[in-house]
Image (cartoon, rainbow, N blue to C red; front, side):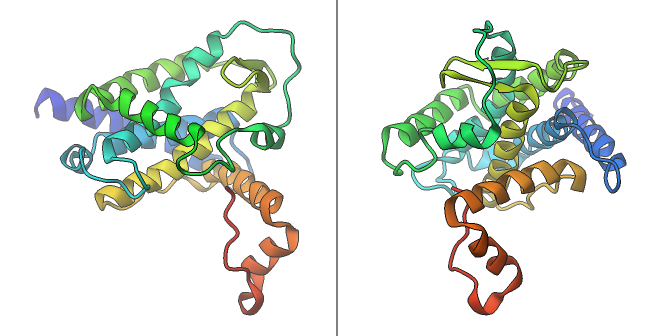
Amino acid sequence: MSATDARATGADARGASAAGASTAGAGATEVSALEAYLSAAGAAVALLRRPEVGAAWEQPSALAEMTVAGLAGHLAYQIFSVGPALEEPLTGEAPIPLLEHYARAAWIDAPLDGEANAGIRASGERIAAEGAQALAERADATYTELTTRLAGRQGDSVVSLSRTGWALALDDFLTTRTMELAVHMDDLAVSVKVAPPELPEAAFAPVLDLLARLAVRKHGQSALLRALTRAERAPAAVNAF
């Protein structure tokens, strides 16, 4: 086994370990936001290490105006962004509710060519500039570091987000990252024509809950109810954003 293979195997094992921990909590027992995040982050590292990602690096992704490299960089950002957020000095501001975070987010209803989304694409490309292998290795190392840094943290502790100007509870902040990981793992898998990672049920639950709540915010309760239960009068779309 080569050194590269050994590192890849280690990443896969850690992803499986995190997933296993979440699976153990599936059913009657819910996993914490921290466990759900680490499960998704481990799966993302394993996907970033896939040779198909590097092979398609310069190709267009499934997302408009975004290359596979830029998408991989944006996916990895959901791992890289947690450590700096934990280091932000507290301002004394109370954390806002999770849905309020999305109500205030500049990108959520912005056009594809708007400043917010253009900035997201540019940031992904910058992060990915080091190349596929280096990006995957940095994501793996950061994931390993986070498993230690996040251990014992209280879910209601405050995380100040200087880039947005408000604060979230740690659990809510990690849930935003878990949702981004789940969505963009699917985007990346489709882009490079591999099967999308399946998160354990308990780890996927907060993602499903958040997306459903955002869909209701955008379309209303009746639209979501009909989409899920009444095909004959279901709306054309119930996208969350």
